[in-house]
Length: 308
Image (cartoon, rainbow, N blue to C red; front, side):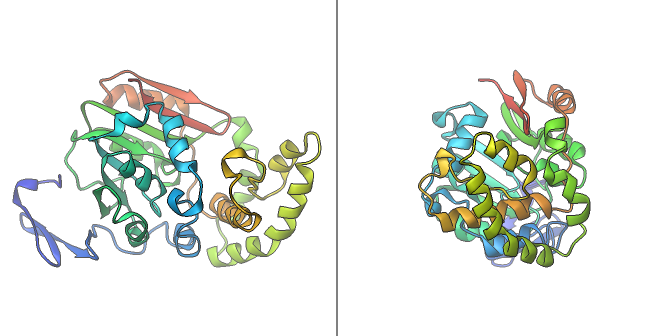
């Protein structure tokens, strides 16, 4: 699966192919260093909330239901498919894809050990530490290219999309998610505050959010009881509070507060956050996909997904 795969071999410490070699640490080939543009924001989330989004550990089916709903493909479709997961993070989607019976090649630029700890014994697959804008893999070799909640956080999202779709094999399918480039999205508190917060030291920003979150959590919970209160709070109060949303109903208040801190920091801290337009997704999809696909633009997210 690696480029020039005819000459690859595994040994205890290195993956070797041709005259090149890549160090293997903890069973993961490391094509990129441990420090990257994601260090400080996403690394903080992995360290402090490593298990928060893992369905099997948080008592929900949030990630499972989200993947099934957003792809529109149904659970059976994933069985036996070779999947390229572009941006695995702590592994919440990796877990679901493997449980659905897919053979998953999960790639992230750093922090891959957290994903390994969370899902290493589940299903079939491997984890690679590499840059999804320069994948060391064979083109046109995957049944499914899957990129969820990642594209907008790469330095050049349009080039990233152009690159990853080249790994869909003939007759293969793709699912790509981006935050929407809509007026509704871009005038939210997140994008008003980001010019300041993305320049802050991530540790300082996390400390600030962690300090104010309990008070705003109580305030927003009170506002949610009022007519129109949720819409008002979600638009103007800088806290991602999911209290009252059915898919999180099994979570106790302390877990909901942790989720609020996690997702608020996730909204404000990334160095890059540039949503890709629906028109560009359509243009690139036409260039690389030989199967029918659709672009679905919602107020906050845009999806490119192949039709079955």
